[in-house]
Length: 90
Ligand SMILES: [Zn+2]
Ligand SMILES: [Zn+2]
Image 1: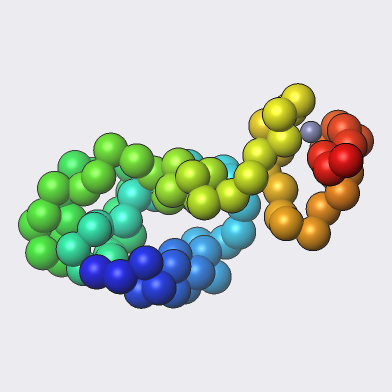
Image 2 (image 1 turned 135 degrees about the vertical axis):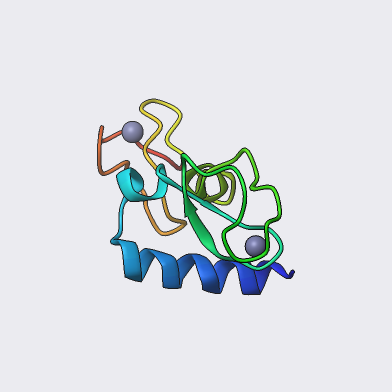
């Protein structure tokens, strides 16, 4: 499964379940078929593969920069943290 495919399925899941960290923290996505599952499930409902330990939110954090002061997730374009106001770039 490619990163692009995973990313696309993540976006579809987000559109379906609603955006935001609180929704992503409650979901894990099957690494084999990309089916989302609630956190209380350990195996994929589609293919039966064991779900990863990481939630959708963990994967999201791994791919994005975070504020060193407050941990808020940032995008490349940001100069100041929107949450705590820390200057991010020199
Ligand atoms: Zn699966
Ligand atoms: Zn911050």
